[in-house]
Image (cartoon, rainbow, N blue to C red; front, side, top):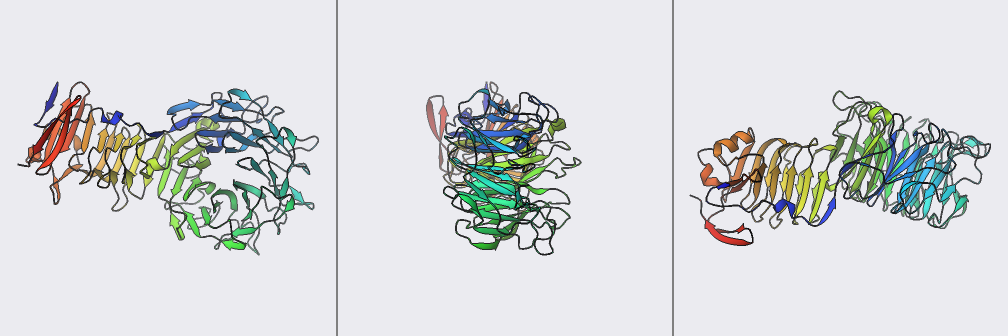
Length: 612
């Protein structure tokens, strides 16, 4: 049975009509996970593939390590396990295979920083795996990478970068001229190489000295490498840290030094600048996890632009900090960069009473920002607990992030995938996104459909979204002409206001599921747009207003927003209830002379309505 006021609304089933691109979210686990494996200590996404390291996992011996491939992350939902497990053919206990991981297309690069090579204990190596888009079960490497001049305790593989067929591998304890300052090695043609190979070029710092840890933070973008040296000294500033840019890695040979040196303009002793690095295009992002910004060891990160042309020694264009930063949070322990979007992890962040639960921060507009800025969005694990270390591994690829929590469940570890657009602005058109396992707080508007049609975001049960910064709100179809966008709310939403459509658009919907919770100042419902409530009949004024509780319902009068009360309900609202689906649909009464097409199955009826 359908109960309705004079107008019957045809929105039931509309939310199932999205046929465009999808990017879902999932929680990633190892099928053989066990306490102490530290799955998620390193992560890297590339397209729809994710690669996750578990450096302490047991294969033939404790601490041998493994890595796991997850495919179809653009469609995966819920809790998933790997498609492929990667191990080294010559693995042994305490190799720490999976200390670092790199992924480019279907090629993976895995660091094993404590592998013994001959009589050289802990010399380290890295392993290349191809065809990760089709491989199954457990596989071993296509290629093993070693340093031609490797020695005991070099730690080759402590950090890796991969771009196309070029690999860059750090050896932070390599001795240069008998001094343990660190180096990095370039390996080319990894799409075709076989067996065990040595480097094409070796990279060192022109001003390197003992214990710099050059090679601790590695990233590769095209043919340009960015290498951190987190214990580099500046005058009396011991262990301030620096980073170095090397170009033309597709052609260089021999031993070379940097094109550019990067430093922090406000660097100080023990900042550890360079502990991690990321690149995208000509932009670089460098972490300094021990920077004393406002608090001791609060941590920060620095953005450098024009790395394709810069020379000499340069300082940052932008400094990134957390707006809620505190002491010893390890902000900057990991970074990711995609276009102008930056990701900075703080894996020791305290969330409520949970010590070291960890968090990750998103920064937008890094191609133009200046000065010191704070995050646009903060991400946490919805099921987070103390000592999870969410953010131990954290990277970006396009719109997709992949975040490791290596301390979860006694160090078993877990990883989380999701998309930036799902928690910022989704405006691709005919596109759906899912938020699953992640909760977020944004200081900006949360927008689903800015100017385009048929964008859809689902906030899953158990997840929380917060949009409470001054003058910010949730927009579903923000501008005229942006139609048929939707927010499917099964989780919890706290917001100043939710705007459902705007004057001049139609079919935008807020659907509130049976598991949803909300606390909003108001729902603003524009004409020809819809509020749907799953699980009850709310067609009477009393039932609807009771359900909304402290959230006011506002509808557009033509010149202003009118608040819906029991006394004016019938003048402002049309609604229907389908007992078959258990869905109540609410719509604002159209403006005078507004024409609406009301669909009945395959047919339709054109009606004209006026406010009373």
